[in-house]
Image (cartoon, rainbow, N blue to C red; front, side, top):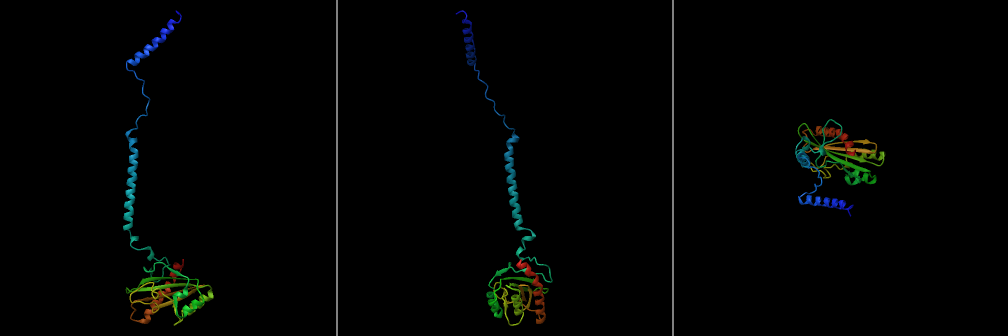
Length: 238
């Protein structure tokens, strides 16, 4: 027993020491925590949101200004022709801003021309109405019709037929009522011109509401306009 007594007393002494330490209010150190972020870092997400809001407001303001101002906003793109320049300046009619395309040509013709197209159906008919302002301020209305036949000989026959008096023609867009011009019922009383391009026949008729004092000079001017309008056909048919 004398050999074990010192060891037992030593262990009892360690236990007494621990109990005395707890009795004095000792607590183990708390677990380590991450240090708080600096104020500058905490503010970054709010700054980013603010920049996004500013960008959105700026975009909305730009769209509002762009939709209500600018030289291109007053002139619709549909009124502009991309055809090559010529003697007269043509604008697309607001009533017919895009070419009208059909395949039943006989339904859009009259007299002997209608009969010919009923026996010799076309592939397609493309028509559009244009306007030009004369030096005296009058407006000339020009109907351009492009008839595509199945064969070149049929196109040549159609061209020859429509070039004769009293044989009818393809309806101009005023005659057909597609476009309405007060006091103007048709364009055939003005200037007529046509040309042949392989299987295509380009037919153009032009007139004004009021004719000039000299009827012969008036018709000559209308024919000049119609002939100048041939260049519009390619723009119509693409």
